[in-house]
Amino acid sequence: MKKIAVFFAEGYEEIEALTVADICRRCELDVELVSVTDERSVKGSHGIVVQMDKIFTEADFASYEMLVLPGGAQGTKNLEAHEGLMAQVDAFYAADKYIAAICAAPSIFGHRGILKGRRACCYPSFESELDGAEVTEGPVEISEHVITSRGMGTAIDFALAIAAVFAGKEKAEEMADTIVYRQ
Image (cartoon, rainbow, N blue to C red; front, side, top):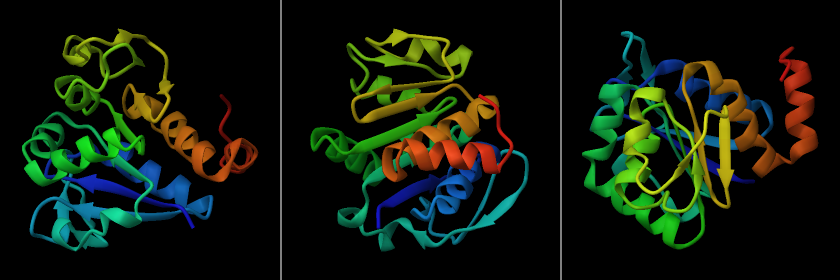
């Protein structure tokens, strides 16, 4: 079974993080919620506390097929400040393994040089942080093994794009129908 890790830092955007976990689990993908803090409960940008499956030091990066970084301005800053996570993002990118980010979080990829020559999107006020990217206003951009999305309003598109990569396009389309989502 394909395994995806979604990383949570204080101030994450709840809908962006949980939509990926929910839709991918509905598609029978193995998704782990991973705290980058030392706590198993992490508070989002709107005060919603979510229980994690693991803390960062328990994560088995060799078992993951994809790393997902949700947005939220403070959550993004806290993710980027975590050196261990940034080392893993760099390693996954270098190994052509999937990495994905939504809202403000694609700025992390821009700062790390990951978006040079790629189509990418993010929350509008962070577009200047997508160093070297061809910035679009699409809901989701997939450029080889790098997936970016714009924000809370595109969270379902983002989650379905990830599901399509790992469960297949047909399964993702079936899921869109099941959740009564019209693209």
